[in-house]
Figure 1 (cartoon, one colour):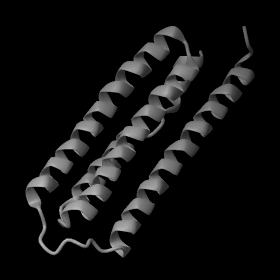
Figure 2 (tube, rainbow, N blue to C red):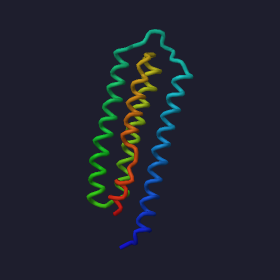
Figure 3 (cartoon, rainbow, N blue to C red):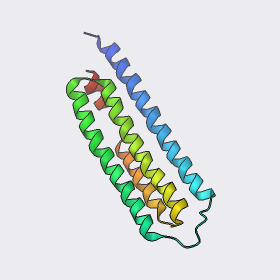
Figure 4 (cartoon, rainbow, N blue to C red):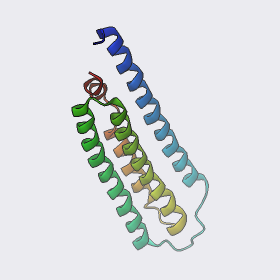
Length: 141
């Protein structure tokens, strides 16, 4: 048994780590967007069909990130495993970053201006996955 101050300190440390990871992935996605804004595509004629396929892939990875996080967070709370909780969050963050990477690929491969939607999906996923202190508290407590 730990006293409440020690437990709260562990919760704060774990939550702070998740917040740093969340912010770092968000900044990475911003750099990817900046890359697409400052480096033009070489394609003269946009390929919209392929662009829609890339957007579909981005949509699928964001949906997958939500499903994986829900399942892993639930299991981590049941098992009282903070490391598993962090793994679930990091996997969700990485999948949302993959949506942004699909946007980068879309920009350079197709030359289409629809690549913004993949970035928007990734950003929306990251906002959904904002680290909650209640999850950490439940997994540690």
